[in-house]
Amino acid sequence: MARLTARGAWARRAALYDWLEGSDLRRASAKKRLFGRARGKTLLVGAGTGLDFRHLAAGSDVTAMDISDAMLTRARARAAASPARVRLVAADALRLPFADGVFETVITSCTMCSVPDPLRAFTEIRRVLGRSGRLLMFEHVRSTQPVLAATLEVMTWWSRRSGTEMNRETVMSASAAGFRIARIESVFLDIILAVEALPTNDMFDRHEDGATGSGWHADDPRGAPPTCAGAA
Amino acid sequence: MAPQRVSGMSRVAFLVGDFALLVTVGIEAALAMHIAHDVVPGILASTIVGMAVGMGAGLLTALAVRPVLGSIETAVPTMIGGMIGGLAVCLVMLVAGRISGMFTLGIGAATGVVLFSMLMAFDRECRRRFDQDRWHA
Image (cartoon, rainbow over all chains, first blue to last red; front, side):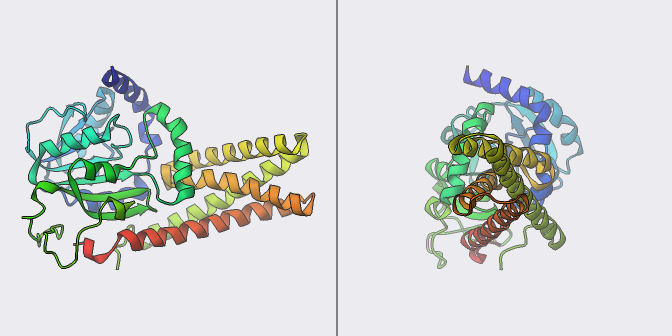
């Protein structure tokens, strides 16, 4: 039922989505930088109308999924125009129709504010992500600044009606689902963040990756990466 | 050195846009409160109406510019600006009694400038907190 409700809600929003979320002008460079870190077979969770397809690395192999057929219909032209090879799939983020560990990178872009159960979605993402994979999140989260946090709470009173929660602790949810936060970039205050996270199961045998610079291992002299407490 | 998020010119353009938006919203909120105190009887009722109208006007302004300046990037500051612009007028009226329309405009613009400055300071703090060299390639 929740799935049907979500499908219906997003189908209704599809027509206005590009205008409502047309913030790409400001966020484009941060997205390009974050999504440029994708390696290998990539899953984009919550593709929407495909606004982000142009930020994907040229030639990359991307499976872009969304729960809404209406969104995917609108995304088709953008998939064809994308520098990446994009395959569109209608699927629910809470029940990803992929085998364990098949993706090297998973990307989310303002997705976790809208899934009904972020922890379950992250658990699914971790399942389909390979041991040496990475999660790249471009997400808006609850601020740590009390006035901004209160404002986001108030905004959630009505944004929730259209399926969007402005006050989620998304970084914390990722940590709770078994991800180690490797890197956070502030895109807008501490509300919109570009985050790179690694599955915790391989954090101790992970080595510095000269190509990406994102690696971390237990005896790293720089100390531990920021936890959700650091992000909060 | 934290990486540059957008090119220099774009960054300046967005800063100017943010500044203009917050000053505009501050003025709208202040004027709404001023007019509400003129036409709505009772201090409590006029304050509530003034704030509601001010915040509503601010959100409409944010809605108009969101494709350029961003959705969350405009909605969050605008909501705060719509509130404090009206409250500032109330506060000044409590202290000084009736104030002129021009003075109200000045209060609204000033609240926009103050809010912009505070957000800039917080933005710097967030960059320091997150964008450290050691977490970047």
